[in-house]
Length: 315
Image 1: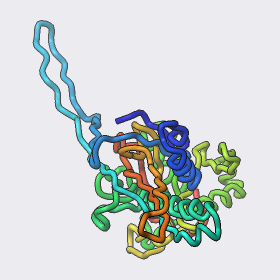
Image 2: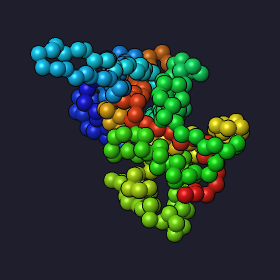
Image 3: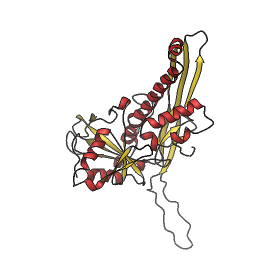
Image 4: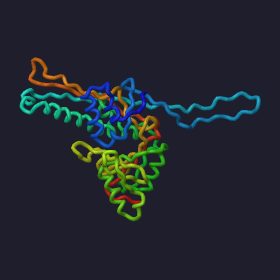
């Protein structure tokens, strides 16, 4: 694997065409997650991460005694990358009337569609439901990580977010420099909690490199996961409650970003092409394509709090 790089950094690569550079930059700006998620280059559609369970045992030895081999503690996790892409087609008469900018506008629409698809799959991707996709954080936590990495409320139908439960989930992610991933509706509850004297000291605000306000809980940045056209539909309050199964709860993910934590995977940079006016056709055509997915450097780099109802935060 290559060294991790953000899409902002990748957009500066001079070996990419100007169109591909613009595509990478447009995706990087499209959602908060791309500002913090590094990508590594993998050499296949499937890839593997080895990690230590930290449960191995070594032994003591006496003087003049040979060492005895301890127990193995190595495990593997498997991940995959999927092909995301779209075609761009515009009638030559539209371009004639509206100018060259019409094709660029159409391509930008496709670029934002691609970024939204990745953004949604980053959380909800499930290869059992769609074999062409890749597994997102929800699927990985539910099916492949230790039970310790998923903390649930105990009340039928779900519970308000408990800061005590959130703190416990943060402790399950062993690395420093974590972020909180949640819906915009959930992030607003932290803003509301900041007006409550009981929790005001835990909620602060800063700005990112684009001047956007960043809410922080205990100095941990909150990153919102939004859907298409600014809809809050990736982590809405429609998940099944852990107890009772009512479709009225949401989740928060605590994640360490980086090659040793949560990272994006790609077989190469996102590429955009303009093939011009196609002979024998009335269309000018192009496309955009990106082979990308999601990986974890270690199973303890992410945790999930689930079963959160649409109610005010409690201690």
